[in-house]
Length: 256
Image (cartoon, rainbow, N blue to C red; front, side, top):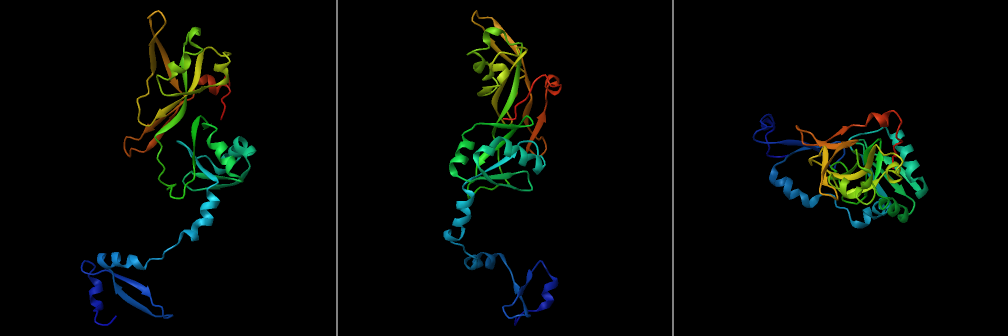
C-alpha cells in the first residue's frame, strides 16, 4: 500500500497489521486495522436473508434439545435410552453435540408436542432436561433454574399416605408425582415422591408439620439426587446419593 512504512510493523503498540489476499490471484496487500474502521466495515459484512435460513429453521422446528443434568453419558447409551422412552413418537433423527446436549427430531410436529407434554424424565436418577428447539437458542449456554428430583420421606405415618402426601412433599418443593410403590402403598418404609427443586435452594433434611390433633410431626427426608452450585465457578454441579436399599435392588427405579 503506497505511503506506508513497513518498518512500523515491528511496533504493535502503534499499529496493527493483517495480511489480506488481494482479489488478484497470487498477490497480497497489507492494510491497517483499527477499532474505527472495524466498526465502519460492518456495513460490508456478509448478509443472509430470512429465505436463506428458512429451510433449516423449518427442519429443526420439529426437534427438542436435551441433556442429562450433572452427567454426560456416552452417546450410544443415550441413543438407546431415547429410543426406549420416545420410540413410539416417530423419531426421525438423534444428533449429538460435544457438550452433552443432543437433539431429537421427530417426523411430525404432533410427536414433538406429545413429548414436551409428557412431563419429566429421569436418567440414572438425574433429570433429563427437555426443551423445544428455537432458532435463536444458544445450546452452549443453557441455564437451568428448576429441575425434578426424587425424595424419600421416611417414617411417614399411614394416615398421611393419601391426600396429605403431596402437601407434605410440597414442604421440600412443588409436588410432581409419587412412584408406583408409594401410590399403591406396597412399600411403606418410606414414601418416594418427585418434587421440583431450585438451583441453589436450601434442601431441608426434615419436614415438620402438625397432625390433626396439633401434635408436631418431624420426618427425615433423603434426596436421591440434588443440584448444587460449585463454590468456585458458581456453575451447576451435582450430588448423587442413592440409598443402599435401591442399590441392592429392593426398589426398581423407573427412568421415566
